[in-house]
Amino acid sequence: MKILRLYGVRLLVALLLMLAAYNAGASSRNEAGATWTLRVPGFNHLNSVTYGNGLFVVVGDSGTILTSRDGVNWIRQTSPTSERLESVAYGNGTFVAVGKGGTILTSQNGVNWMQRTSLTRDQLWGVVYGNGLFVAVGENGTILTSRDGVNWTQRTLGISNPLLDVTYGNGTFVAVGYDAILTSLDGLRWFLRPLPRSSLLNSVTYENGTFVAVGNCDTILTSIDGEDWTEEVLESDDFSSVTCFMDVTYGNGLFVVVGREGTILTSPDGTEWTVRTSGTDYALFGVAYGNGLLVVVGGKGTILTSPDGVSWTTRASGTGNALEFTSVTYGNGFFVAVGDNGSILTSRDGVNWMQRTLGISNPLLDVTYGNGTFVAVGDYGTILTSPNGVTWTERASRMNDRLVGVTYGNGLFVAVGGPSSLFSPGATILTSRDGVRWTEAKQIPPMWRSLKSVAYGNGLFVAVGYDGTILTSPDGASWMKQTSWTSNDLFGVTYGNGLFVAVGEDGTVLTSQNGVNWTQRTLPTTNILKGVTYGNSTFVVVGSDGTILTSRDGVRWAQQVSPTRDFLRGVAYGNGTFVAVGESGAILTSP
Image (cartoon, rainbow, N blue to C red; front, side, top):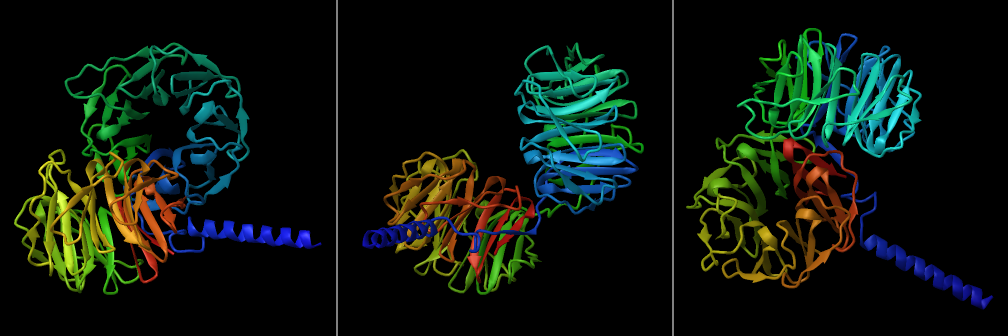
């Protein structure tokens, strides 16, 4: 009995130690930094558009669904998913949308949507209706079929090629993808067809007696029957560079192809192609025709319309905020976010935001608070100060360099950056006691790399930058280069709980107790990490593709569920709340 009791005590102690070790690392779901709410949505990428029952329906990132009767005025509908939706089709009185993780949604009217069981977790890239059947295609050669859009059956092909789109015409289903073209008369039995050359095909359509498939590297293929394909050669002075074609449709007597960098091509027969002016550089992902109108959708909420395929008009999608935010801080009871075009927003709670008018257009790249003063820095040596976050005054930096980071510590503001040219060597460091009068640090070696962020802690300023650069200084005037053990660019640094944490490209996280000796940590991501802060006993890191990571000790990190795919560039903590900001005006809070 004593042995059993002793064993039980030891087991209990071991379990408690394991629990303590876990809690010292990644945050639990009940703590700040673990659960996030999207307060101001960024522009979601719009990936596909279709027309049916007198309605245009658009789907995109984060479960976005938009509808319009005329292609001009758009309404955002409630979506039952936050997963990325890749394609949408209409048939048999039903809209069907498919996307990430095998997501399938259906709607009778485009307004009310229900999630369906797909029997797969593979990404679904394309869906079409034909011959009384819905057919969806996706990763690993996945093909699903359904009579009603509700009950789905998975078909076995024996191939693993990703299939990116599917169409129906001339009594035949045609699916295309990575080095693959397949045909089927009934959607059940499929046959692999030869390609003219190795190709990544993104889309396919049928009309006017011709199948047209498009893809990467200016690829356009045509076929009469879906079995034998011919590569079309684009001969035009307008093709200045190789591009990627993303979608193709037919309407108003024209095939219309859309792609990266705002590319739009038209052709009456699929053979002779003309480049059209789209008026945008954003990637265009989807195109559809209905009710006498061509509608194109793409990156950053882009919607274009045209009655003839020649003249295009940009429409408001209502999917986000036009501002791009780069940094956020907290001080004097306010969150202050800064970004492009001299934009500054303030908020007391991180939920309700007010835009401030400055009268400048230079991008602002960082902001901090100290000594009763907000200081924002940006391109062309821009420095602004404010006592309250509302009224701002421009200060003279006497330079044209790009100021990317700013912090306050030990009675001193320190701003860092580099030359305006991204490829020129050189580190810029300025200091100020009051944020008004600035002095440039001397004796900075000319070959030091441009700096991207700076923090203060433990009696030391630490600045980080390109090629793994780490500099330290006790006073902001004399700086010493430290060994980081990485050549990856470092974009953010903070100090908390006796630890410096620096973050950068390829999921890089470095930690140091003294700013001199650094250790690289293993993370569950290779995304670019841009911003880092410390609050509520938790480090929070944000980055590309909506990445959010948390850690209690800077060693063990947990990836959190993010409500956005927008690039998050800055994060701050104040008044019990984390606030993250990023591209397309996205603002998130936790809790």
